Every structure is written in C-alpha cells, then in structure tokens.
Image 1 (cartoon, rainbow, N blue to C red):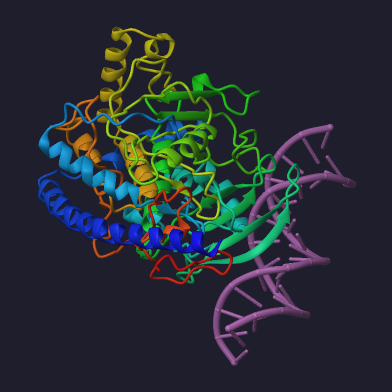
Image 2: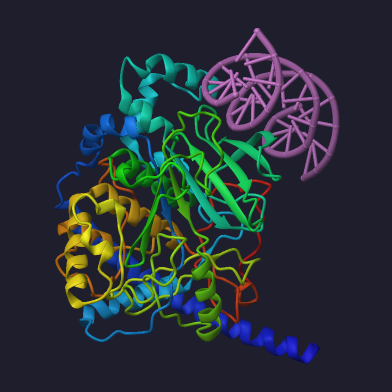
Length: 517
DNA sequence: CGTGTTTGACCAGCGC
DNA sequence: GCGCTGGTCAAACACG
C-alpha cells in the first residue's frame, strides 16, 4: 500500500511539474494573446448593448420571463484539429492547455456567479445605482420602492435591479466561492425544500447592495443553487469578476429582450429548452415554477437567469472522458443546458479542450465543459432566436439544416451583443475569466469573427469585449492560476481549471485547500 | 474585541 | 381579514 501511494505521489509530482511548465507557457501565450486582443479592441467602437437593453427593457418588464442559461456539459467530442490554421492551432492549443487547468470550484465558485456581481463589471449600472444613492437598501425598501415606482418611472433601472441570476452547480461546500466576501444575515427553510436557504450580502463594500441566496436543490443535494441579486457598487476582486460578468451579462441578456415569451408555458417549469450546438437555453415562464430557481414569494418575481452547471450528461461525459483523457482533454463544449444531452453530442467538436468544472471534492461530478468545434447537423431548437427562425428547431438532420443553423447562429450572435456577452461571460466564468481571448472577440467583431466560422474551432473567448456596458471587462493578466495538485485532480489525474487565487479572503463556509504541493 | 454566524422575531406580499 | 411564505433584522453567540 505505501508503495503504491509513493508511486502515486511520484506521478502526481511529475504531473505537477508538467503542469507548471504548461502553465508558464500558457501564461506567456495568454499575455501575447491579450496584447493582440487589446490592439484589436482599441479599434473597436464602443458597444451599444446598453442602448439596446434600454430600448428593450420596457417590453421586458412586462414579460419578465425567466431565462435559464444552462451551462451543462454536453457530450464529448473527439479531437479533431484538422482544418485549423496554424494560428488556430496555436490558439487552440493555448485554449486547450488553459482549459486543461481546470476550474477549481472547490470552494464555491462554480459559479456563484452572480454575484450579480456582474454588476461589478457593469459600470454604467453601478453608476446609476450610485447616483440613486441606493446603498444597500433593504429588500423591503426595495420592494416598496419598486412598487411605488412601478408605474412612474425608470422601468429599466428597476428591472435591471431586480434581475437575478441563478447558478446551479454541483458543490460539496456550503457555498460556492465566487471571489466575493459574503456575510450571512439570515437563514430560512423554504417551503418545498427541506434544505434551508441562506441569505448573504456582499461585504466587500459596506454599502454594496448585492445579496445572494444559497440553497441546496431538494432533488439533488449535491447541487447548490445560488441566486444573486443586485449590483456591486465597488471594484470586485479579480476572482469575482468572472462570475460577476456572467451574471451581469445574463441579466443584460434577459433584460434586453432575448427571451421568448411566446414559447412559454405556465404549466411547465421549463417551457422550452433549446440546444444551440452545445448551447442550450431554457426559458422559464415564471421563476416560481422554475425548478432551478428558488421559489419566489411574489408573483412579480424578478426576471431570473439560471446558469445550470450541472448538466447530467455533462457529468456522464466528464466522468467518462476524464478517465479516458486524464490529462489531455478533447472537447470544449460550451453547454448551456441541462436537459437534452444528445442533441449536440458533437456540436462544436473540434479540438476539444475538456473543461472540468467541478469541485475537487466531487471528482466524479464535473460540472461543465467547454466545447467549440464544428457544429453538427443535429436537432436544434433555440427559443432565443425562435422569432427569427424556427426552422432549425424542427429540422433534424441534413446539411440544409446545418447551414440554416449556422446562419441563424451567425445572425443571433452578430445581432445580439447581449447574447454574446452572456456566452462570453459564461464561458469566462467557467474558464476563470482570463483564459479566453479570441473567440468572443471575433464573435463581436462581426458575428463570427474575421477568422472564425462556425465549424471552425474557436480559439478563445474574450469577455473583454462584453458590449453591454461599454465597460469592457478587464481580464486579470496578473492573476496566476494556482497549480492544481495531482492529488486534487478530480479523476485519474485530470486537471481542473483553477480559479485565480483570490485576493480576498474566502468566506468561512467555503473551503480553501492548498492547491499547490 | 472585532467579525461573522445563528436564530427567533418581525414585516410585507400574496392567495384564499 | 387571515394565514402562509419569503425576506430581513438584530440580539445572542461563537470564533480567532
């Protein structure tokens, strides 16, 4: 027995060394990419998503649908690098390596996203909120204010404030570590769920209005449901920006009218789940009924976006492939979904960089994967774009449908910066925010990007180009990814993309383990 | 002693 | 109006 352990230790050390080297290379590559990105970005005109959001908010306010952004894992894909240019290859390798680092959610970051924090990256809205002098008004006050103002003014700010982002992720720890500091101010057992719901408020800044609710899923105790509400009115820790940007983007997307109320069904929690080549969007009609959402006591439930990082399939996939590819992963699958596993088994499947996005402590339940590759002609339904194109939803196979899908995706991505933001942010949150550079940048550039076509491997994703608030998210260049220790590897030495080290202390509830040797 | 958590009480909204 | 429920407050408590 001891011998075996020593061997394991040895191999772990070796792997760790490899990782260190790899990390160095990744960092170098990343910095170089970042420079490139900024060069490009400087030439980009300011984004106008905020304007779009404004224009659409009025309409949204009435609908207030719940949009579920499910970041589930999709099926894996094979390594298929063929066809990529040398640059693509380099980037893909970079991406692959970086993704291979694995998000270490162990403490809670899976996505706790939300911190609604998003707001942090949402400079415009932060300012607005600050201007309103709202320094963390009690919810009661907020409710009162909402009610009193409802008919009078500023539906948009109101709505924006009320927008919530819910993150579902497997997490063994009491809370997910989202890089922010939280103080628990209450706990309550909600009806229908034996697990108590904990209430937290952001303590990074005394006046920060951001709150979050944490609750275990009654159906699956391993799933932690974190709901963020509010906007941070202070600079966020680097580690929290990804989550914040995710939630912000999601909220922005929600508020900007990307939802499709026409497909909603009041009877079903999930009115429609759509797969978009690995991107599955579920639109909920009512937060109350949403299985992923915390119950809302009010009928006027705020619009909520749910990021589901618990896709069952993904788990299967992760389990399988993490064993098969302990170190070199193959698929990057960005999966916004939790429902249909097979729909996009091969979506975007080139080069896979497997992103193991799960708590270290729960090695067998990785939470997410990023997959970019060639879309395969599979059934696709995408409520988000249903208004413009419903054909894709019904078409099952055939080249025509693929083309249609490609066109549709292109349109959607190019026409809705919010969606881009959401995707970018979601990805960034999974990748730790600073590993993704090019893909979304390209997407933002012209729908799919100058060098990127649907079907080509995506080299990276940049959330820096988040258009929603004209306040491009700034990546953490200086952040260094902690080296995962082999012993922490979830499965068979598979790597998890570790989140950057947090400049802020973690909440007590979230465990922090030394990831280094 | 400062900070964070626990927990019962309180309040507001909603449905009946 | 009443009861239920969700959300918050705040005193007591725990911990470093």
